[in-house]
Length: 111
Image (cartoon, rainbow, N blue to C red; front, side, top):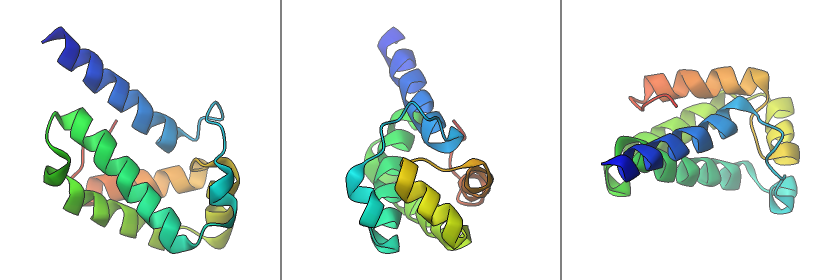
């Protein structure tokens, strides 16, 4: 029971770092030239992993909602926000607000 709570806390922190734009994350050099489709897939995969742990369910249970999240988030981002994501591997302040709106719209759990 205690391990489950720790795992959920770590997952929440992980997604929180992505959504918070924490600069402690080392930028991924592969994202610098990634297409928007690749960024969307990376966002979906990160969401799936994090939400599955956060909700204590199998990844298959959240894949569809995370696809919704990734699509809505990437569609909402401006070109400058996409470039900032490429450069830092995290969402900046304005992108973070759009990502949180997508979390809510897609029925996911906020970190």
